[in-house]
Length: 353
Ligand SMILES: *Cc1c(COP(=O)(O)O)cnc(C)c1O
Image 1 (tube, helix red, strand yellow):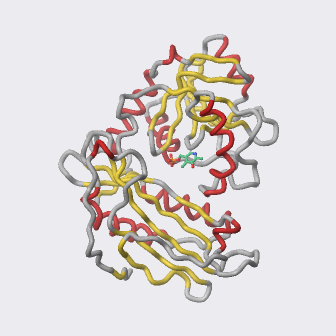
Image 2 (image 1 turned 90 degrees about the vertical axis):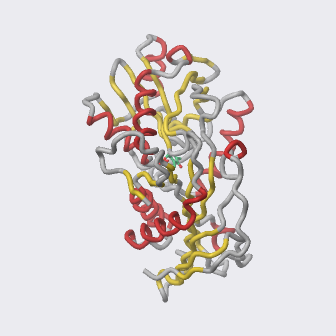
Image 3 (image 1 turned 90 degrees about the horizontal axis):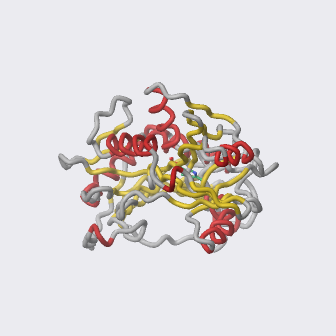
């Protein structure tokens, strides 16, 4: 694959690890690839990071044709940089693209481009504990016309942002508000696609939860509001009477790569894991009779985010005394150990740069 390179003559100074936060700083370059019906994917290029110029009628600005991915590059103790299951992000992006009628990407070439881009920008990967280089591939419809139809032109871009440790203050169990009014997605909709529109639709509930002191919302299914779906931008798992239970992939929840990795890991260790429907009634009962042992969210940003409190219709339940549970800690240690190269990767999840 040929990737054109345009040099940036104004390289930026890298921020101090303590200033990083999430998604505030961006590296010197970005990868761009342009699609048209006539030419397919063409003009692959790495260019200086800069503002985009798009037509005011561009599809994305009016009809929300946008999908994205999120993954991280991790710096190991020996200085090398590595990625965690990047091919899964590319595959998921293609499933999102299919749902939104955006063009699919060739898997191998996209991975090649991603690796080349990370290699070029790898010095931006911070080395302090818990820090990483967050990679944000995204795609949007870019027809210069207000007509409504499957897009004929699109842009695929990868940007990168050095990010701080999610747990700079140590792992802290969060409070979650169970949302019983707004819904995030329905089966047949775009719930399983990682698209910007899903986030736009969930902001109102997120805002309300925040005003009441909760970190995120837990979504119920869009039809009956009885079944647990996921938490904000994370999948959710519960340990009930010794078994791990997580909502099955029904089409309305996002198939997380951290979720998949937790399940593969737990099964390899002989845990009882159930992917099934889990109703709010069953969860309430488990909270009331003490059989809910642990609850946690899982996603690339936090890896594992223990849940210390759940609130449903104004009723508050404390989970595991508001402390991180043994299994949550075990999953966190194992996954982060593999990601930062402190533990052997027996699953073949790691791609070295
Ligand atoms: C990205 C995302 C997740 C987590 O997926 P990972 O691949 O584990 O990072 C979960 N839910 C939603 C809504 C998401 O957008």
